Image (cartoon, rainbow, N blue to C red; front, side):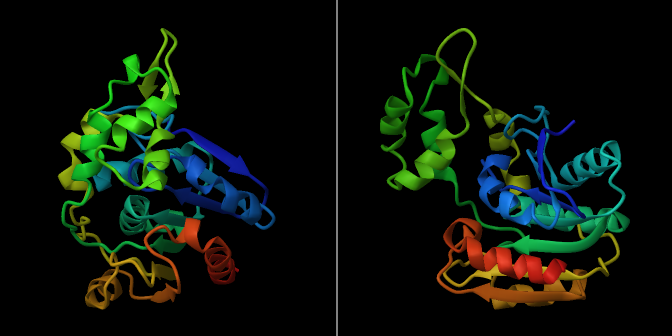
Length: 253
């Protein structure tokens, strides 16, 4: 079953992280939302402390979530996802609409994207975690491929101490790399549109959700509302957490 962490009490709000992320990325906001909701942060397959599988695609990840909700006796929830997690949230709403009372999608559209992580894969694959002495050494090695220290620190959260010494990757890097084209690919839009209330949030400085994406969003999520957050890029929850928290709280009620 998917690894998860829960906060607070009230109606369930399930939050899904993005590619290379973990549930830890959302803990700060989860603690604030916990005043109103039971916030359930989930590690998705091949990420964080969740099980490793030999395949990844959005139908499989939506099925993972549906099985997780059933195991938790959650028959309906508010569902929020960012980036890859937003695609999983959309696919879940399309495939299992009865499970999703309201949908929140942060800075992603239901379409294919161009490759944009080759430098990340190069940096990650440059490391042999088993022989890395410390995180600083790992950071220095990755800096040859990634100049942004914030991105490196985000990725290094995936390093865990190995029992036999050294480190290991928590994420299943080989399968993420193997199925990367599916991760950046389009959703399966063969199901009927999701008729529940939907909020799409994009960062004003991000190019992930364009005006050209609106027809596809509205066709598959006819009750969708799009809001743009000023002074935010793709990482809306990290760059403008208060604005995002207020938007989501107002929408969910």
